[in-house]
Image 1 (tube, rainbow, N blue to C red):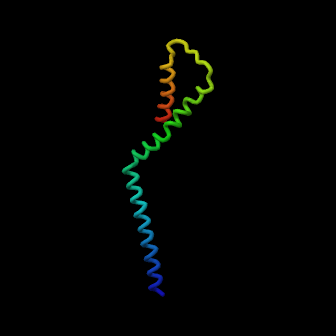
Image 2 (image 1 turned 60 degrees about the vertical axis):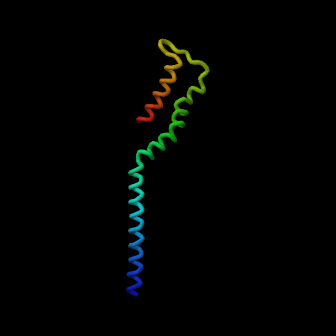
Image 3 (image 1 turned 90 degrees about the horizontal axis):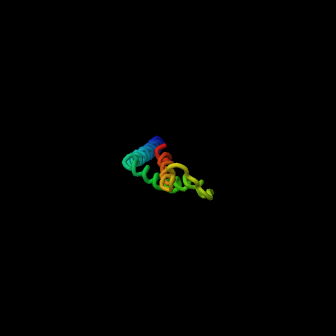
Length: 88
């Protein structure tokens, strides 16, 4: 009876150690690839960010610019909004 209990305890211990080692290996891999993982998420999200930043323009019939405003400035302002989202 004692031998059976010892064997079960050892099996539970071995399983716990294996799980802990697996978690440790996963953490090591994530630490190595942290920057790459963040960049991947960034590039996947970027099209949606640009789309959301430019969406209000879809409802505009006409844009009247005064002063030094022009198409280039408008695009620059939109991209500035995207950049602000990226850094926040």
